[in-house]
Structures are given as C-alpha cells and as structure tokens.
Length: 313
Image 1: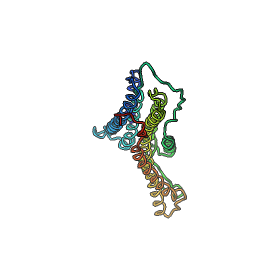
Image 2 (image 1 turned 120 degrees about the vertical axis):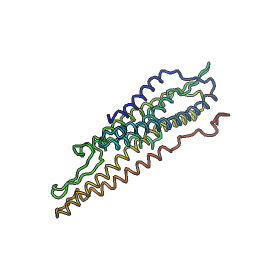
Image 3 (image 1 turned 120 degrees about the horizontal axis):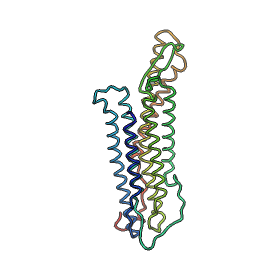
Image 4 (image 1 turned 135 degrees about the horizontal axis):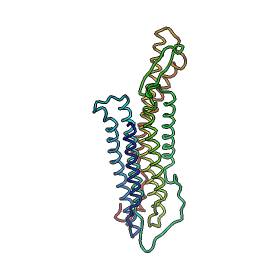
C-alpha cells in the first residue's frame, strides 16, 4: 500500500507516453514557422510540466496520508507521504517533458534538409546538471542501502549503544526499509523516465533550419528541462530523508551517551562521535533540499537574439 501512489503515477506516465509515441507529429512547412512553433512548443512543455508535477505531488501526498483520515493508525505514514510527494512531482514533470519531446514539431515539404550528426544520450545536457543528477541518484540509493543495514527491526528506528553496550538510545524516523523502499522505488522510476526523455531529446527530428546554433540550443534547452525537474525532485527527497535520518542518529547517540553518563558508565567512542556526525549530515541534507529548489528555478539555455525568426520573439 505504501508504494501504491508512486506506482500509480509511474504507470500513468508510462501508459500515456506509450500511447503518445504512436501519435503523428504536426508538420510545419517553412523554416521560420518551425523555429517559432518549436519555441512556443517548448514554453508549453515547461509550463505543463510544472503544473502537472505539482498536481501529482499533492495527489500522491494525499493518497499516502489517506489512512490518517480513515482512522487507520500506521506509523510512518506522514514520512512516506513527505518522501513520495517530490518523487511523484519529478516523475510527472519528467513524463510531461518526455511527451513534449515525442510530439516535437518537425519540418515538412518538398525540400527538406538532413544533417548527419551523431548525438549521444548525454551530449545535450549541461555537464554540471548531469553530474549533479548522477550524484544525487547514487547518493540516494547508497543512503537507502545504509539505512537498511543499520535500522532497527521496525524498519524506521536507529539504535545506538553506549556504556559497554548496556545502554541504548533510539530515535526515528530513520532511513530504514519503511522509508527506504518508497524512496528507492521513486528514484529508480524517476531515473528510468529521465533516461527515456534524454533519449527522446537526442533522437528527435532536426528542425528545418540551416543555422546549427538554433538546433543545438533548442536541444540543450530540452535536455536542461528534463534534468532540471528530475534532479530537483531527487535532491529534495534525498536531502529530506538524509536530514531526518541524521537528526535521528544524532538524537539516538546523544540519548545513549547521556544515559551512560548518568549511570557512571563510559560513553564509548561511537556514542561520543555520532552526534557530531549526525549534525553534519543533517546540514548537508538541508543544503541539498535548498539546492533542489535552486535547480528547479535554473533557466534553460535561450536562443541568441540574432537567430530568432521575425515575429517569433
């Protein structure tokens, strides 16, 4: 049940994308019209991705919390909802961008140009955004794996021992399977959609223009839109999970150390160091969430003024 909201979003995106892939793209007969319409198309994609992503995030959070309104008491439900919302936003917004790339305008007419240019999957994306995306997804999966290995039997609590391991300190929420499974599921689904959208950007038909700069910038802007939404969602989800998990680690270690001291027992190295480690990791997680909001606001590359068609600015 915890995975149902995210799986519904993923299944909807994949189903709609598959049907749209069969649609016929609207052709344009002239170079000027194609460039102008492509820019308008890109603007509509960007706006729709934001709106649909927000709606999906709110709806997913609501579905994950639904049991609270029906009287069913399930521990950790709020945490799962908070984690699922940004991941649902990322999957929905990336799916909209993917649909936009599949319906990208292409030139038509008696005379058409074709350039033999090999485009790789990651060639169009900004280097910094690609590195940030890969790093965030990797860090998220490593965090989930570490949480699964160190969480308590309930899957959402961290326990720290002190005083010859006779004194315990425990705290939650923590990145155990309770929260790690929804996070990993969302990250894997989001990564798959991101790769699919980047593939669509790399393989979409070229515009009917002789100016290579136009084609290059429009393709770079599309890759930027793909990576922007996906990376922002992953940063917020992973950063949030890291923050609360690190604070729980800090609180559990501090509690164990305090109990050991009160009982006249040695605190131990781990219980003495872990509060500092938890504090530092909590700051890193909070900075990651702030960075996610910043990435979402990052502007895509724009066409140089001299390349804009008359009447299409």
